[in-house]
Length: 336
Image (cartoon, rainbow, N blue to C red):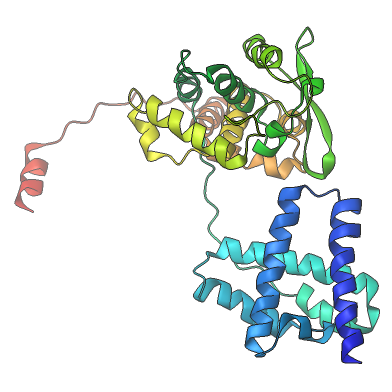
């Protein structure tokens, strides 16, 4: 009986990845790896806790109290933050929903897992670059370097389209239309297609590497003519950010990842007055709520909204008086 339960767990695990994630949801390889890593950690935790092998686990071992113990382990022993804990829980919930669809006899057991709440976390404002900072990073590419054309085209593309790094690295020559209307076809989460317009500057930069590169296959490649990786993009971006920080010291205070270029594109579009529903489609967001988070990130937009409200309310603004510290104030600070 136990052997059969072990086979049931393996069969449902395989169908979860192959039939549900890959075929039904069209999950990207990055998503599949993230789900795989969470479930591997969970099963290893269960096996260690029961002093057994992971091969001995059955569907009966997947219980809410053990999921909670695993989440505590993730925070207390692995040192992960609350947001990572919530991501692990989201994966386990997704797997529990799959089990519920195929194993109704344990519906109460899986339902308890689905009822586990996420932990409240502090929502941090998205990091982004102002337009002059983004342009400085792109301008930091040395035109004399062997891969200047590739690097400049990549940075321009990320900022121009707000593409996820996985979307940018999946681009092939056949996905580009570099004559008017200049555009690129991107494949987002769930293999959703969208077309993004290109600046003439971006199209020219892409044309240079299309002409020099292979006629088929992925567009962005490393020094060994292999497909460029996410880590490779992060390394290149970090290098140019450090160079740009020589003239813009503020960049040294920021952790600029490839995804920050996506944030920068979104905020620049918002600053230009583009409606959030249009930006949602431009970035390939599933929900406008995801796009709206960028509004809270930009202090200038908040000031503009406040000024517009001030004028609409008909309240005359007082002329700001320049503040000068008094001698008593400075004397007090000196006494501390």
